[in-house]
Length: 475
Image (cartoon, rainbow, N blue to C red; front, side, top):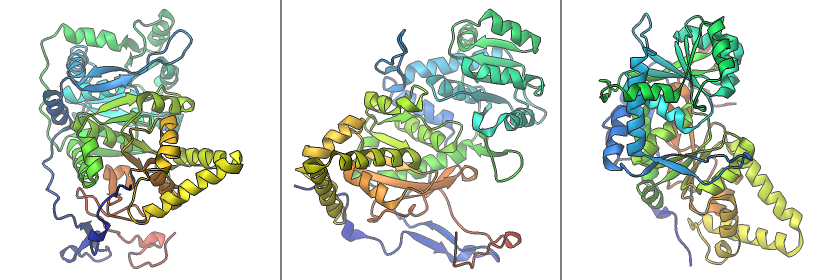
């Protein structure tokens, strides 16, 4: 009648271990994962990871989008395979070099700016930059206009890939950003004459991604640039606590190590491992300008998974989930709290037998979860399977959340609703995202889990701010 999550009788004495040999004055102890089965990661560049998947899964769907009709309504997902995207990436990279759009800065670093919402061209531009030996600089509106100008000037970015939705913002910053010389539009086939005229007045050149790709087609096939795991792949700016944005220099090795740590932790759950290695799919809607979504993409590409993009409209997100039916869903607490409120408040508002039945079913599943039981043959068929299908989660085998704490009762609710693994992670941009994640053997929600095998964790005293590793009261 029931299906168990894991053998909950095999709980370890501790989920992390202290390294006594790493003690330093003013520093807390170093904590590491206790997973004795974890292998040390054999790091590769993100280009190597993509090449691996192109060779192993050439015809797997890779990047998907929903074309809009004349009325603006989205149709079914259309896909480009790993082989098709690989060819396009080579051509775009060759075009970027042929058009001299990745000129080195004074410190011999090549950058490509990317300024748009998630879409297939975001990934194509990113990996084209890597293939050409460059790193990317994501730009996003929430930094603020002044901060964006600061980023452009500090990095000396000469070329930015964007859509027509962002070009006016770039035009407005052009006079204060003398290094900016070229804009590549990826949502139009030709550049409007008015845009070209405005660009010329600002000493800018505007091309389409199709133009750059065509220029690359005319060149010989481009072999990937010789990159090492120590080379920077993303210069990722965060708002910081004070002052100007701070740029975190993330290397290919950093990103791949976190990718390894995430997959290793997830793969210790048998149903999740089976899903990950069997044509997994995700919906990409969290900003690619942030490290969480970048880490997710790195993992999916390594696994040969499918990445379907949202329409760019948060109000239509549920519609995109229903169309894609992802097997893995990464979301922030704000979204999960909204869905939770809508379901629970809707059930209560229904009143009568419907409200009673929903609460009875939920109580039964919550009771089962305490014993490690994920499913219920009666209530799943009667209630929860229908809710999952309505939301587009009928194929979901893993829910992951981070960026802020999710209330324990809400995470437990999702475990009952979905009947699958629901993990919480913690991380920060400077550490390339995830540093801890729920262990599959953990019974209770409300923690962010032990360290991943990809990192060590310790606290360091900051006396000037009144923080000491000996503190016992936090908050």
